[in-house]
Structure formats: structure tokens, C-alpha cells
Image (cartoon, rainbow, N blue to C red; front, side):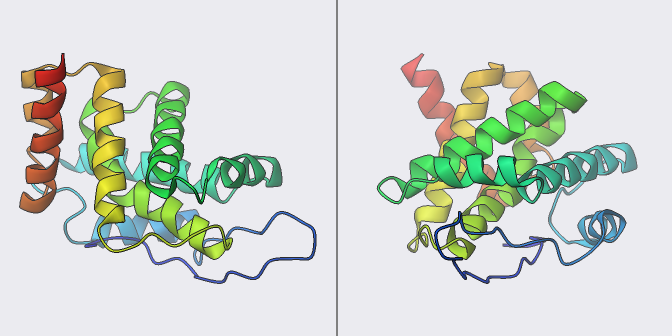
Length: 185
């Protein structure tokens, strides 16, 4: 996935303890620079939107790789019997919680999905919970996007502003999810 932060893929499990999640390879400032330099994160956006995206991603990474209690809760929610659903649930819950805490600009919420879902999937793999099979990552991304669309109740104009900066492939996937949500509602 273009622009995705690289995380260590260690999956050692300590005897009797909850598996440790991989830790970031760089400082938050270095990660911000990595996100700003990464191609395809958000195209056609202002410096302010990119900075807001970076702020959201930094917060997500801090929660994902944060204190042991948070890691334990995240790992506990990752269900090997439902890998796609549990990755999507964890990612959407974390994004919504971060947005409630730091009040992100609406236009960065859906673009964050492309980075956040793979990070949650990598945490599951690193902890030895499960590895997503081919196609499941894309399903988890679409499911997360659908959950966020349902949560935020975006209308056509808001949705249009959000998707302006997304890649063609991600745009096509999200349009399919959004149209399905409109048809169901």
C-alpha cells in the first residue's frame, strides 16, 4: 500500500503474557516526516490538511503502540474467528475515539483508513493472533470505511470533499461501500 508506514513484523509471544505489539521504528517527528513524504497518502490537499492527517496518524500510532493496558485491550478485540470484522472494528473504534479526543478535520477521517487498517492487521500478525489472507485487508478497509460513514452520517457533498484526495483504487472501493450504504438506508 503506497505510503504505508513500515512496522516490524516480530511475532514472539512471551510465556503466559499477552503478546507485545511491535513498537514504532522512529520518533513521532520522524513518523510525521515519513507520512508527509509518503506518496499517495492524500493527493491534492493543502498543507493544513496534510498536517491534520499527520496529527491523526500520529495519535493513532501512539494509541496502537501505547501503554500496555491499551495494547491488551486492542489485542483482546482482535478475534482470529473474525479477522476482517475485528480489524475493522478496532480500526474504526480507534479512529472515532481519536477524533472525539482531538477533533480531527472531517476530510482526513476516511483517508486515514488506508493507513490505520493495515497497522491494526500488522499488530494482529506481530502478536501471533492471525494473518489476513489475500483480499481480506481490502475487505477490512471497506468495512472500516462503511462503519465510519455510518457513524458520521456523511452526505453526498461531505463525501465528495473527502474523496477528492484519495487514490483511484481506494476511491472506487469506497464509492461501492457508500452506494451500498445509501441503498440500505
